[in-house]
Image 1 (cartoon, one colour):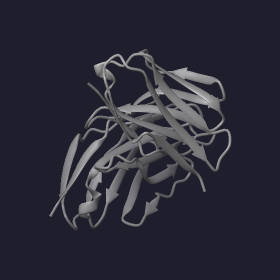
Image 2 (cartoon, chains in turn cyan, red):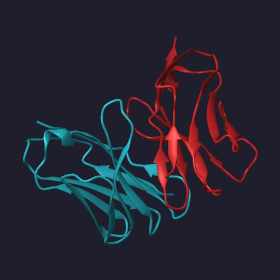
Image 3 (cartoon, each protein chain N blue to C red):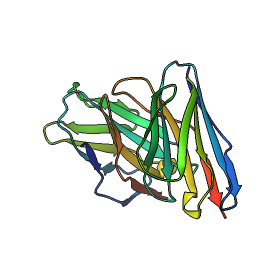
Length: 112
Length: 112
C-alpha cells in the first residue's frame, strides 16, 4: 500500500532563516506531487505541483521554491523565511488522471 | 477555470442527527471526480467519499452519502447519525485530468 511521509512535523524558525521541508511517497511510482499551505482555520492554497523529476509548476509567486530530485521525493525550500510563511504545509500525491489526492500528516511552521 | 463553492462556512448539528453540507462546482469537462475530505483538529486530511461523474448512482460510505446532481453541478454530503468525532472542517474538491480544486471548506461542529 502507498504511504506518504512529511518531516519535520513541527518547526519553529526565526525570520530570515532558511527552510527545507521534505515529503516522500512509498508504494507507487511516478506520482503527481503537490505542496499546499493552509493558514489557521482557512482553506488550502496550492503552492507547487510536479508531474515528474525536475518538473515543477508554481501556482503562487513567493519566496518559496520546490524541487523534485527523485521520483518520490518532493522538497519545499526557502532561502529567507518571512513572518507570512507561517502556516500548515501539506504534501499530497496522486496517480495520473482525475483521481484521488492523498495527503501527508503535514508540517506546522512557525516563523518568529 | 474550474471552481468549487461551499456556501456554508459553519454548521452545527446535534449528536445522532443528520446534517447536509452543500457544494457546487463549475466545469465544462465531462470526465471528472468529486470528493469530500475531512480535516479534524489534528489537521490530517482524510478522504471521506468520492464520486465518479460518469456514475449515476450516488456514492455511500457507511454514515456518509452524497447527492450528486450532475446537470445542476451540485455535490452535497449527508452525514447520518452524527458523532462527536465528525467535528471537523469538510472540504469539497473537484478533479479532472489536469486540475485538482478545493472549495473553501465548511466547519462542522457536532454538539453533545
